[in-house]
Image (cartoon, rainbow, N blue to C red; front, side, top):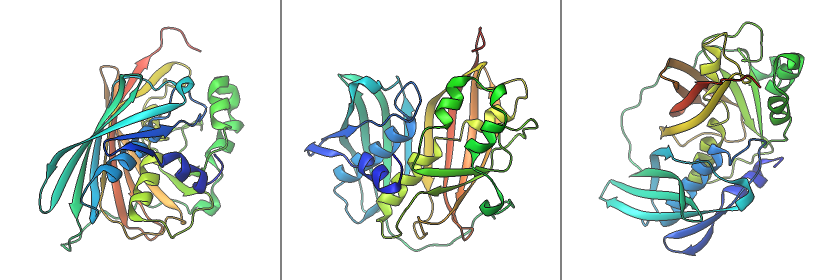
Length: 288
């Protein structure tokens, strides 16, 4: 995938019946189906299944149970109703391959309402025009990285990432702050489409802040995988074609797990979404 139009085409699902949807798979350079694709397609399935068409997703909570197989080419999504009220509704989405459950999501919807507004301010960071893409930072230090990580970073993606405190520098910090921009994105997308794009993108980097917190940990000696992922959508008025700022950190690593967080800000400094993820963070017995 080289642009946002191709990404939206991937996220869109084929309707089999009112509870079953079929999604295609894209190889992003990882050994298994990319978690962000599962998240975005699960949200797409929930929107198609939700009968409250004037509601918008306010949060999605996902547990990952097994890795998606790239060779299978497709993923089936089963949607079921959990609750429908006057202001909120909740739907469950189960992603499967050949009767094997990959992940389960609970998706909450809320009717559009006005209310009080407050947010944390966007942290300071150099504007993206002063930064280089993350993959260029990696190439400067590629002798310290496994070849499979270099290969993964070189895959053409529909998103540009630019980081100041990159894990590919010699002096990492305990955070992972970066800018991201969807390539060739048009600001005429629906609110559900914008949410699905943001959800897809966050999974690329959120666990990287755990690597930054440990100077002895790197991609060659640490096994990482998503265990669960949650995202809350705070605001829906923003320009998807502009840059977004991700303020990410890792409050804790313990018991071979890492807990990470991300706040997503629009180019105008509005906090539009927040995410948390717990991931496997296991030292490998043999470095690769």
